[in-house]
Length: 322
Image (cartoon, rainbow, N blue to C red; front, side, top):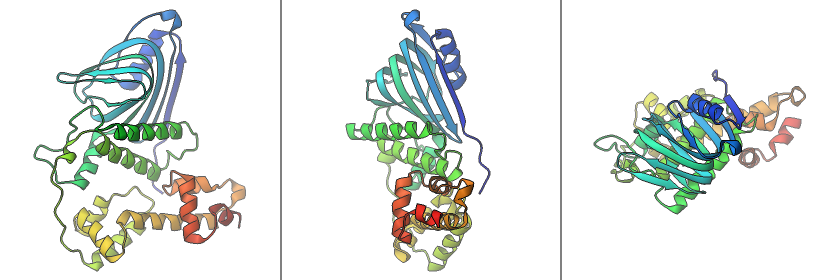
């Protein structure tokens, strides 16, 4: 396994608006909000979890607040559980009601919120752009987001569900966020969902034409590469570059020769490695099914158990007890 930076967590609860203002500035950089309302009834609570490029912010506080923010180099989106949130930049304004979703403007803007509880998800914009490049031809002026609001109510709900899942996952002390495979999987999930939820240039770009045919020997080289690097975060683009072909050509070749994608093959390899660990480790020393599953990139113990039973005919806990 590759070395992994620690998960960084911070929590604060206060009734002092000045303490809250400094805490927000410390976490969010240029966010130095001004508050308006009854200081005596003020409540503020914040939890921030950072795991590599991924960050999950959860905040709850009373009173009106407004601040100038940006420009940002990261993609950020808020899911509001309570209250109201308003973004205003040079050309656009977005009001996010309770239950709603909105994307932070990348350029300088003004944020205003009232009595809120909400979750902000943050990943590097370059990660989203790389995911976009894998899907379509690069537009003439490069990838960019085109709007602050989701493209539809259904897509707003999709982001709200993802935000709720990430918030619940981030509060678990053993969620596996320290595992590089878990972080890579979650970051890719966020980027892919962002491209489906918020208007962007991939929705108007031309799709890549059919790739040239790739020889079976290239597929075998790709399989060897995936097996050698299974313990590391891997993208299809990395595998394709190592084999001297394009990502879509490699995808098509895997489907043609094996009937599934390179990442599906990688999941099979990682499932086999998890099986090997379950057989080899001693449960008396504290090894758990969930811990081994997270080590090999499975964020859901339930989905891991289903896949494991399909492959090996028994529950992973049975293998561990043996």
